[in-house]
Image 1 (cartoon, rainbow, N blue to C red):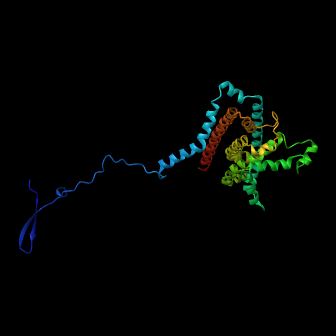
Image 2 (image 1 turned 120 degrees about the vertical axis):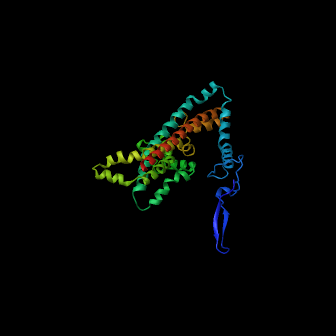
Image 3 (image 1 turned 45 degrees about the vertical axis):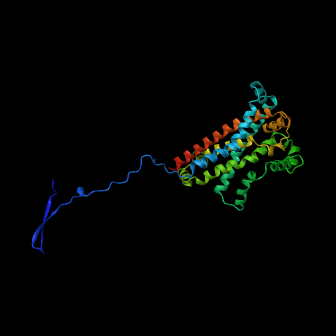
Length: 316
């Protein structure tokens, strides 16, 4: 079939000229290059070299954390179940459990109250020397625990600056359980302060002003407006201070007195078993502490997630 013609008049030659009409369909179009099917499009990742960095992370954690902990567990497996049970439930070990967890729980409770007060003062008030006080809160982080124990012993002993006034009254603060609680309060206070302080800084003061305008008292404003906001942070700080106190050794060993069944903490039990070459018994007690510490870490992570969800919900 011939293409249609278009009649045109040529004015120069005084005659008509017929030209074929070319449509777009008649123009040959070269085919577009088609990517090969074998090339798969990979999703771009934010972190370059993800496979390499993930492998290095797993290797580093295995080398630093997992391999030592697995050695601890494997050494414990050398004991039979009756031997393991006897090692972790002896009278002396059970007494150390009660003292360690009881003193840690009490110290964490005290830190929740006074840590909240310290964080409140640092956030809501301006006074001379505020930066110095703020820096002193972090002192237990930087101070070696042995130095903290020696310092507390020098203060609270019978001939110390404080103990010389309390012991004549029948109040002994060093070389007994009281000294253990005081040492654990000292090392656990920063955890509560540094956990609650950012939440207080981010809290909207307009809510407190609105509650005050509506006639709420200071206690009602605190209990119904402020406390629900900082409650997750307080629980997280409590759990962190409690977990830190359970494994504390350096600051407690100098002020505890270390009397069996009276003022002997669980980390000291582990050290004593190692000095007696009872490596399996030491690792057995250490495994119990490891399981408890791992459960506390899970609890802390859950509380931190709850805190993030609450803060995200309140901000929206």
